[in-house]
Length: 85
Ligand SMILES: [Zn+2]
Ligand SMILES: [Zn+2]
Image 1 (cartoon, rainbow, N blue to C red):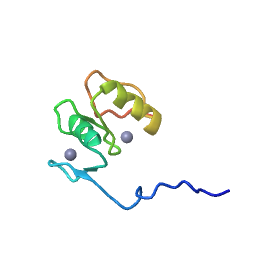
Image 2: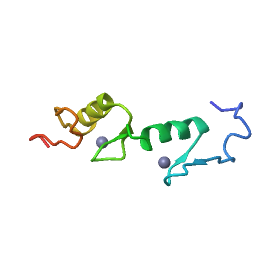
Image 3: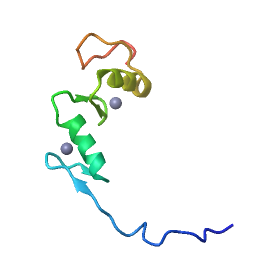
């Protein structure tokens, strides 16, 4: 089994879109705008345990539950550790 149809110029060019407000480098303009939207807005919600960032509290709660096993939410309190942690 061989890969005879390998695209020629897919590897070499490394184009990055650096964020103007932090050290983040996106792989595309779309990713950069998304990064800015979730990271550099007042709505940005950051996980206290890892670099996870989202604009939606629901996503953050689900993330913490799935990834870190932290349960529960207390209204708008973003930094919350339950007894299971
Ligand atoms: Zn940034
Ligand atoms: Zn996390």
